[in-house]
Length: 101
Image 1 (cartoon, rainbow, N blue to C red):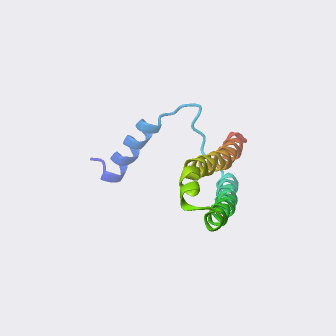
Image 2 (tube, rainbow, N blue to C red):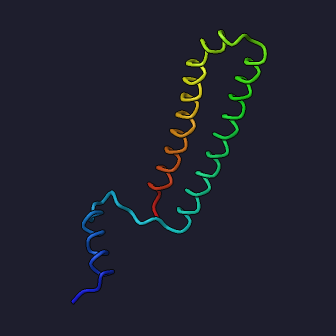
């Protein structure tokens, strides 16, 4: 009779499969991926602060109606920058995963 842990591991192996795409990461790769994630989270936080600062500056200088009209543009800019930062991050992570362990 198998333990619950053994059954769970078998089920996990079935889900993951033995695809050639699935590669066990080395400890160095895991550390490198964690570092890339930290760097890009910081990069996004920095960009977000800059963008929100611009919004606040405009809010203090412009009338509320003008600010409301530009709100959609600000949100699109924030989304564009976020997408750019995280796309770059994901590409670097994928490059690390593709390296031979």
